[in-house]
Image (cartoon, rainbow, N blue to C red; front, top):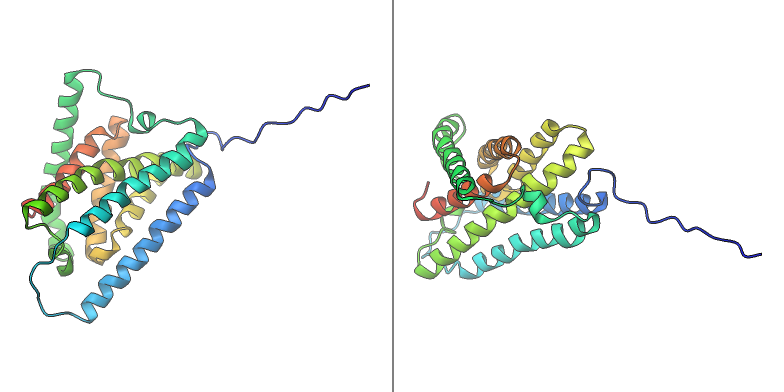
Length: 241
């Protein structure tokens, strides 16, 4: 008599997760490793200052950063979201259905940027002005660098919001059991991932990330944050805000 053998299907990811735990752990380890490397670079630059030199061509650096931004999104999508059947659209919060939605997100995005313009000077008084001096040499000057900076800023606005306020926020919400602990963890991780800019800048960026997280949670969409993030980076490079 034949025996029917029933094979259990592979265990799915934990309910609510948009990717396996190992996938998120690898991403966090990578971000922390980049943080440590950036902090070491900044510390070495402060300990061994170099004589000012003419502006260097930043094109290759911008291109490498551009590839890095999209590489993170590819990692999140290919190795994580596809395993659980989650789409990027779901992570972002849907698409614009009408012109009014676009206008609303534009207003919210620029409102967030305007809020940051008010908060930033207050933080600089309490902490330290500006960012690390070594960052100034990385800002664009030539037409080609300006074009690449804008492309990099637009990419960072989309990619970093998807990775941090989308993917990691969803994962940490399930793992911590609440959206507010997740919101705090994401803000801190986003801040420390900019360790190459110095400690004071990390604190400011953490607060900035917390504001972005609040908007994403309230709006239930990453769209206004993407717009605000992209414009903030563009302004930082072109009009030095």
